[in-house]
Amino acid sequence: MENLKYAYKFVFPDGTSKAFDVVLDGRMNLVTEKLTVNPPWTRLTSCKCKECPLDEKKDKYCPAALAMVHLIDFCKDMPASQHARAIVESPYRTYVKNVSLQEGLSSLVGIYMATGGCPVFSILKSMVRFHLPFASMEETGYRVFSMYLLAQYYLSKKGVVPDWKMEKLPKVYRKISAVNSSFCERLRTVVASDSSVNAVIILDALGGFIELSFKRNAMRDIEEWFSLDDWK
Image (cartoon, rainbow, N blue to C red; front, side, top):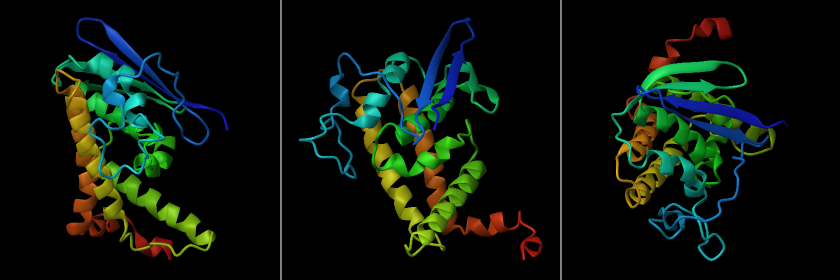
């Protein structure tokens, strides 16, 4: 399959701008150029996530950290409250929104985490195929539940017992949340501002919403959006 590209551009009030082109291969893996020098903060041993299954003897660097070196270099001294006009071009449409830097970065960080090689976040690759920048809590919940149930359908076709009740989904997001927390600690060792750290925190809040949805039975609220009689 052909590569997929998401072009992010941040235009600041003083007229300056910064662009990030995210290129993904057909399997939703991030296509990157090899760095000349890998910064020390990208080492796997630097605030390594407790949930990380990678072997330090084989993998010297955190793949998600390597994927975000250019992004962190750009924003590490910029305040989270900095505002910008974010323009995101996809193969299907263009999204434009006035955002705080931390909100704009959160959408971009989400792609890097899912496609950069992190084995915990790789479960979210399918969502990146139809990436929705600046998604709300409700939009994120709907997309996650839909993605998870579609994955169960494909598993059932392969003879695997599906989790139609989504009982395993909260556990998936607890692992993702643990990685987010450790990654924030990693970023705090190198950034002077809070923009990139807050971007991960926002991303984690969206994930936390998934687990909270089960506790509050938010699925019942979503059910009200359907005219179920029409589906019989």
